[in-house]
Image 1 (spheres, rainbow, N blue to C red):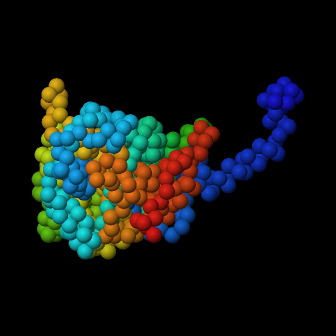
Image 2 (tube, rainbow, N blue to C red):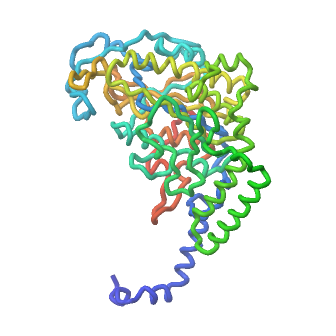
Image 3 (cartoon, rainbow, N blue to C red):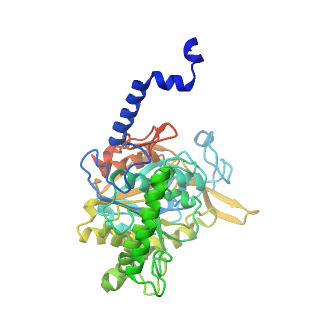
Length: 474
């Protein structure tokens, strides 16, 4: 470093390089305009598309716990032939597993498979409803991830990082292109099936402005607690109260410049608008009986996956940009056959009904439906007397299956393939970051250009990775 510069005070430096700092400030303004955001960006304001979008919205069906691709989508006759034998050392060299040894015995598929539709997609007998719509679906059999434990893997799929604190995919979309609705959140979360390893980190806004985080809706009663006015408070009184609070918050913002105060103001306004919209959203009385039966929704349903699927369609109709359904219960370390059977009974009908319903309403073409978990399951068996486990499958990050439908993707195809044991991708390997890049692409976003500068560094959903899956969207 120059000796004279080293001896300068910080005040002297700023005094002598004002023009340079002005250039930095100007560059920052331009960066904000073209995607490198700042915390002072206007709440919920659409920042524009990088190119014409093929989809207006996303419904992401996240199967938490990791479904067994070998028992649902990726049939491997070789596993039947080798059942009970150890996988060759050359295949498993250098692999890590959560609960089993690499030389555990092979476990064959637990169910029969058959080909369906004009596309000839091969599915397990546990997916009778999905088999009816395979020509509207594209299956990706070669997905892989960097994580092999549930919590970091779930967070990784949803945020692009295994470490909590990064913005979720729905938050990036809300920040990047805004919302199509003023009286519902742009990013809504629906949960069923139990607890989630990744928790709220999966729909958090991270370092993006707080108004972009996902809003969980309950499956019964008021969608959000306390959304209804207490007894004795009418609409006029509430409006006047919110206006007063807003003025106080605005005055505080002018004094401090803390951007989260704007988030608070917007939250009050959104809650007020939702009070009129939310009851209508949750009222299924306008749905005909045939639709309820197609989804498998029963009158006493409270928080079922089927109800979440129907609610997702209703949210999509009302302009919600990103709708995330989390259904847990797919972690089958023991009795994978019984576990898969049970989960398919809960989810298969709703998934297929969602595709049928969107299609008949003319919405599938601009609604991207995504299905998948955080990783796959091993071709080897998991058994442990100490843990009370037998005939299960361990975590398998090397290869698993996802599918997409609608939203401009090329339907009726199978992309990628794994080896004869279902262990590694051998054709068209697809990383989790590629999935994220492709989802953004369908909504008109270049994943390399949607950035936000935090702590002096520009961040993006796909970090420095990711490629759009050409065969899926080309």
